Length: 358
Image (tube, rainbow, N blue to C red; front, top):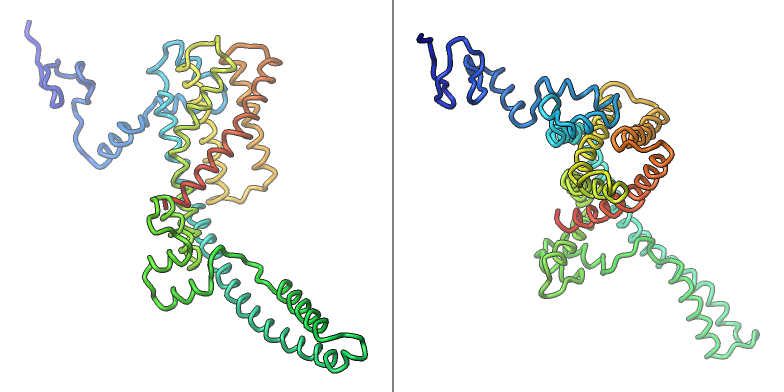
């Protein structure tokens, strides 16, 4: 008996009329292109923002370790894939903090300009003080010179006294802001519109600088002009998403060390994806509420941040199925190792890269 069939517009395979989805490729049979369909497909294809996200969200937030356990059990289509969830939530997180980043960049530039302006005032003040000090010294030394015979000073003794006083005044009137180059000369070159290469050479750059040396001197020049700090801050924040893709596997490796007999490295990576997704979700909500809704008291922010440790502890107990005492000890050591060594080292590298590369 013949049946009515249609041809799929995507894979060009036949299917029975009345099907909502092609049995061969899964595309909707009545997928007319509208604005809604266009954006839904975009989000769905890149972030898998569909019913699986909603099914995964509440277990992620309120059932520590549940999603990772179910994924290893084989339920890999019922819930959102760990890497896809991490990617989607991290994009939202960095989008939200980008609003605060702009404020920090602006404040950094303002602070940079204030430092340069203050330095210029200090230089001018220092010059005035030196003139004033020289007048004072002359007034003080004149009666001493006139009466040196009465106080037992010969010519050599008077000269020595004069030099000691002048050296002491010079030492106490030095500028508070120190530069490794002659800033007055550099400022004069900048004001005269000198070529950048000449200015960089005056600052101490070698004749054949490496890429990193040139970038460091160029950024130092920007700071000297009062407009480099914001770019460094922006480059630092721009580098954080990339660094997280290295920190997450490193976190999974630490878990592998402490749970070496609890599965393959990929198992620990699944746990890490879901745990980092949880962290990004929590802090996305905190940042969004503080920024757009209500300024939450600091003690509540800290309380929420500390609560993520207890989530981590419960997740370890549920996922690795060890007793709570051993899990508590391991969770403390893992958190201590990651927060005290891994994160500071990573952010130090980021700060250096931001200064050199931007």
